[in-house]
Amino acid sequence: MPPSPRRGRVAAPAGQPPHVWRKSIEKLTRQHEQAGAPPNLTLCFTFPSGRPASRSRVTFVLPEHVPDFDGEEAWFEMALTAGVPWSYWRAVRQVDPPATTRQADAR
Image (cartoon, rainbow, N blue to C red; front, top):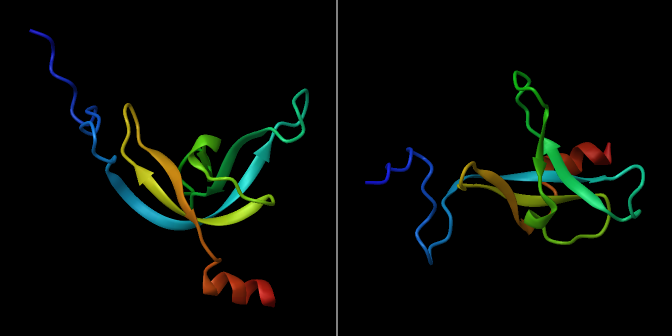
């Protein structure tokens, strides 16, 4: 008899979208390769994680999980999506900046 999968390691059933753990509005910043690569190669996207106790103050998002956009930064609705073997962030859609950020930038 094959061993049962460990708890939390089961993928979503076929035909169903993956489970979304959390959603938030974040400003993604494009990160480029610096040397030896084509100039428009995007390695990843980052956004501040706000968790100073963790090893990194930013969260990384793979380019295939972000729709195309112009410029180096843009605001997106982000979803923490259940995956196997770990969860990942993906950009759901591009949104306008939050009102509090627009007021702070105007000063």
